[in-house]
Image (cartoon, rainbow, N blue to C red; front, side, top):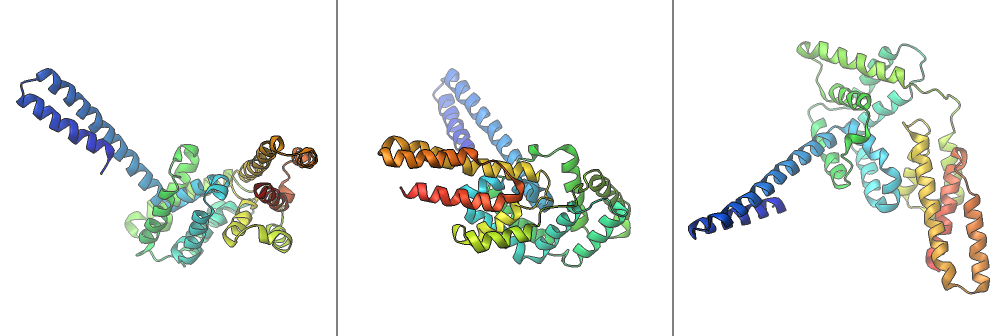
Length: 307
């Protein structure tokens, strides 16, 4: 039961008690408190409904999830792993995910509308329209638990594009909605054409991750290794900003640990810690060595936490 409803119920009962006792001034005070609690409850429910609506739109919620990856990477890696595994194991979700990835990969070669239509056709082959909403509700519950339903971080164009994608992926193609489907395809194609991949000489993510797995695989569990690969994908929207945010987070954590240890250490240890801090201060964000750098930072962090 909502806390606001409890407050409303409590003050409503007090209102009636005060009326029965003939204390109209107190009754009026309790009624105002009950009204405030009820209005807050309505606002809470409206916000919750909006969050549910956002999270049931897999296209939009997945984008918001990616936005929060740097934070979730360190604060709740188990939940991240659960999201990744849920998408991987559910054909409806994985097909939607591949469609979104295909849109990101559009580089301007060929007609954008045809590209979107063909990508949709291929993705739809793996989607069961009779169960897709059930799949989306399943992942929505996980997204809700992670608190990632703030679509305020999306631009108006992004929000419209993800709503169009959700409509295309979840709707059966019928005569009565054919115009709406065609309009949505046109709208999505316009968006991808305006946000096409400009850099065709991208970092080889698979090569980076393989190198990481050979040299640093022991530092992260399987879910975290998969997440490093996602973070390293230079084709994702705002990828570099997300990657730098993650790098800075780990670097700052290490510096803070060093600063906490220095006052408690002897002269020899302080000298070693000073060297580590100098090394950390010299580290700068480099998209090409991101996986290796993050692994190094995690290694330093683990050593410092064990002291």
